View 1 (cartoon, rainbow, N blue to C red):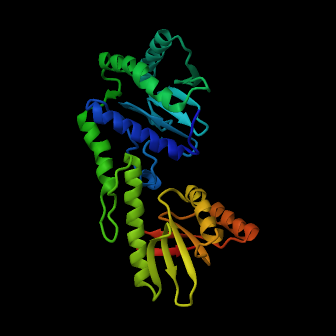
View 2: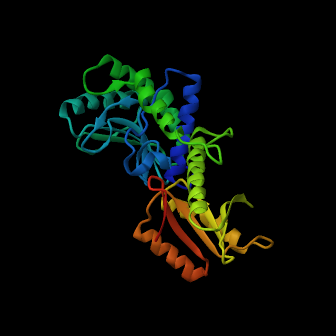
View 3: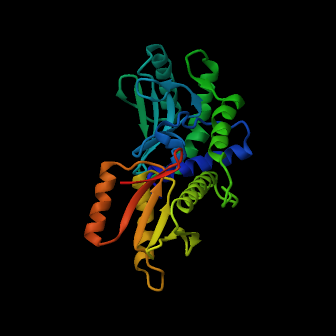
Length: 317
């Protein structure tokens, strides 16, 4: 089960949860996403997976054929959880992991299904809350797996250590918190770790977009007026409201819709002539078609623009 609307929300909650454990247990380590493919890390996808599932491992070892961890806890977007053990790219490692599967089955009195050759999966009962299964995995399965790996080194799966943590977890934190501090400090309030990163990125995007809007044109540019990220009044008197998001485009549209409708229709508010959602990312064709349908069906002047952080350009679609 889950209380989240998306995998992205679960990614952030799991990250915050594990970081909080680390604060009280300095020898507790986990594996974050190592490669920032498609800007996923900056969007808040701290662990491997996609919009349908995510996986977290506490050991260093990968199945290169499946492009997943050798050993992991996972959750799907519907909240169903599983443990996965896989080595489809290495038969020697697969034999080693098959022994681990037998031990887990015996000690936990459960069955792991071999869903593919040399890939095993245990499905948690569907009525369990996903964070409870994560904690259960940390409390029960992890010590069993730790002991097994420690007693059987040399198979390409290793225990994590301080050096690994500094390289990937601390390094990720440092990367995500880098940035300038112009008109608005990138993160000064006390929030969750993932929320802190999102605030940093939001403020960095806001600062850059304000600079761009002030430099390009004679318009009046204001920030944080009536909870609108950026308000622009053009020389012709048109009011443009910009709502900035740090997530991918589809998620950004979902998150911004309620806010933008309020800005456009709620009584006693300054009305917007144009409502613009802005992220760092290029939209898909489906994203553009979706917004076209919303404009035509509901007669809401909602648009999307991408702000290119490298070129400092605002792009329309």
